[in-house]
Image (cartoon, rainbow, N blue to C red; front, side, top):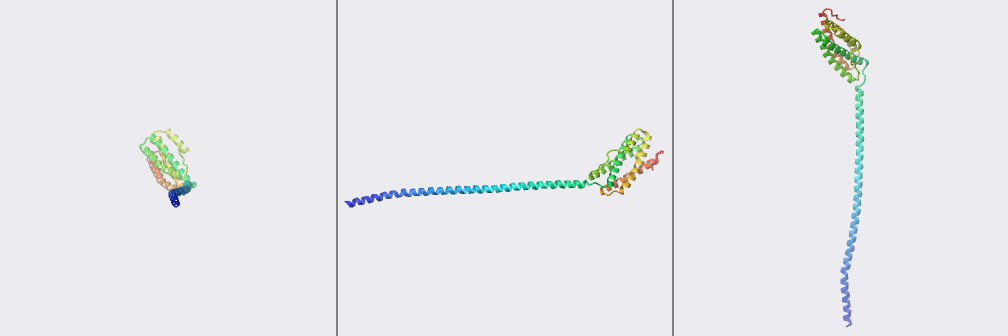
Length: 249
């Protein structure tokens, strides 16, 4: 009887122990899972922080690099603009170098002669009686007008200021011509605007040519000379064909 009681207590203890084991195992597994999740979250959080930190650092580097690049490009652009401005200024200064006094005088003399002849020719075209004189006057306007355009182009390139109106002598001559008419006008115009003027201009161009150094000034002077010579020749022929017209030489 006593043995049976001992056996029952052992069986009861075994059963209780068997029931306790699953609960203990489940508790251990739960604790392990909790710990694992905690580690995982901690690791993920740390990794995220590292990634965020790394991204920030990387972005910062890129931003700094871009900023530096923009500054460098801006500086380079500014430097390029400065160099361009300096180059333009150098070109302007080079093209604006003053000519010798002889070259400047030659340009001014040619321009003044052209202006004088165009102005006198315009008066003659409207007042001359002879068709031959009118034709000569129109040729003065055309030829000296074209010659003046060439002189002005060279003068602008060289930075030389030219006269823009007839000189005092030709203003006085124009005033006298305006008071004449008919044959008297024709004779006065051909004597002054034809023979005398072109003889004087021819001599002046010959003297100027000896002092010209600049190639461009020389080129335009060489173009003027044959025009003036032809005008003088025509004026001489017209003067000799009409009684009372002096050659002016």
